[in-house]
Length: 96
Figure 1 (cartoon, rainbow, N blue to C red):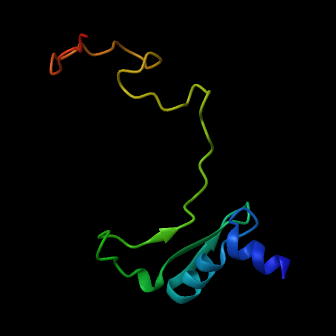
Figure 2: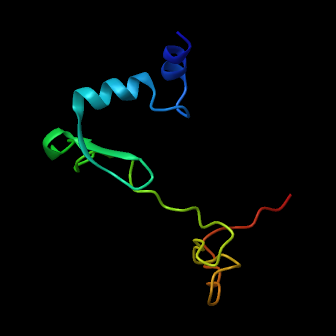
């Protein structure tokens, strides 16, 4: 009973019951990586009309690069390379 409740309400022990049902009904196993993660897509690679692409879940693992030299730094960030772009004047500063 405990395992059933854990599967029903938590995601950190495994996939939830709802995800397991959805995967069995609509999913097609694609493969498994070296860490044991399993990958699925919509059966037959069918295009989702809402998204315009095939649905996939459990995408490949990407390490968290925060705090490393490879971290994402958008333009305008004080940590980005190069110079910060000048203000365009498309706003008016608030004054009390």
